[in-house]
Image (cartoon, rainbow, N blue to C red; front, side, top):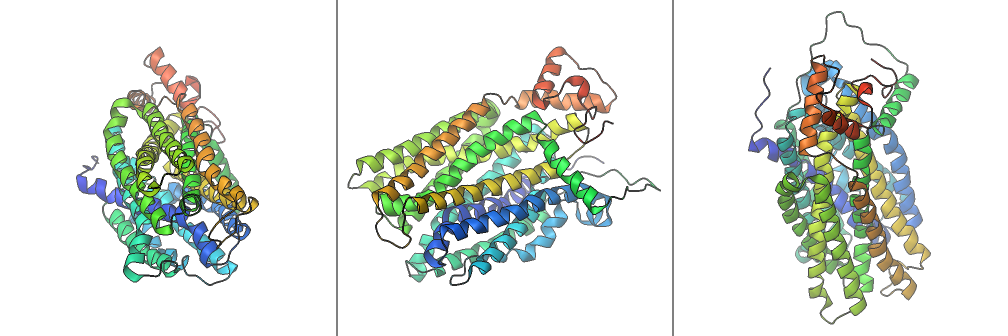
Length: 499
């Protein structure tokens, strides 16, 4: 069967689902710690417990979803509804659970349950969603456009996450009301249901090979299945390009998580602003990120991923240093001047958000040359688990360090020690993480040209050729995979046994 034609509507429909992916994470990273402390009476320790418990459960759930989606094609359900898209379909009616997280005045148990439930629903969509672009095409340029459109919609949702609280305040009043966040949760819940539905309707998956008559599926005990699953998770880290990609991904995203968690405190207590000012600045930053993603889509094709990533690191670092400079100078019109470093930081953040997910679309190809199999699901599971775990840890660390510094929730002013901690969290931590990501990027060699070599090598293996086309091609594939050429195409123990 011929490959389906990818049209503009398909790029748009695919990208829309990341309004859920990035939008919910932007809201949680930017506001949940503040909401828990200001309106729910939770301490930083209690908030940290919520994040930690949810991560323990997610450590099982996200990789399990990836494993299930990789294997659902062997069932009637997978062949009828799609081994990836099926999970999107069944999760749509559960998305209003996002609003339940933002109801004030309940117990620790309530916030623990609602946070965990939404996190599991989130993973049930984002893990299979992360596999859809490679399912729909294997063309390098089209995959880059898919990633770019996805990030454009992600930045639109981040803009909403930044400015929606202020918009709600201006409409319903109640500057210090928890209802602001509840209304925000309801609006996002409706939006999430709409975009995931559109993605489901306008996406597809690669055609699966027919089931052979009389084929018998090997039955495994639950323990054997779970053991095999986590061996599969560990096997992803044996692929060199994926390890380096994770380093860049974590450097670029954790620095934003720490920054986001500390930024509202920085504006309110270090610069003596307000939640509304912080919301405005986050919205302005997100708007610049949207412009940056649009600029990085063609730039990454010309400059290639690793150099583009380093440019994004430089811009974000410049913005952070600019914010610190304003804090030290403390000019009279500081709120207006804040726009300068905020907008510069937004340019860098847009690139850092786009580039790792652009790269991710090609990782399954590197894995295929190693294993001879398509395992998009397990890689998506590892990516989503890593993303949510590091975000929760970042928010948790910020809360614990604020408590340790003597920060007092609800106080209009803070001690010098607490303010120094806020400033340090927003500057030193992100700058170190950016430096780490930039360092890793110098070793990352996957780009348009090396990907073409990779795909040509896969084609050779499929045709029965076992020798490389040239020594140059051999070196490229060995660098990307981390394996010697004669160990590729399943001739290794990555999956437990050789072919």
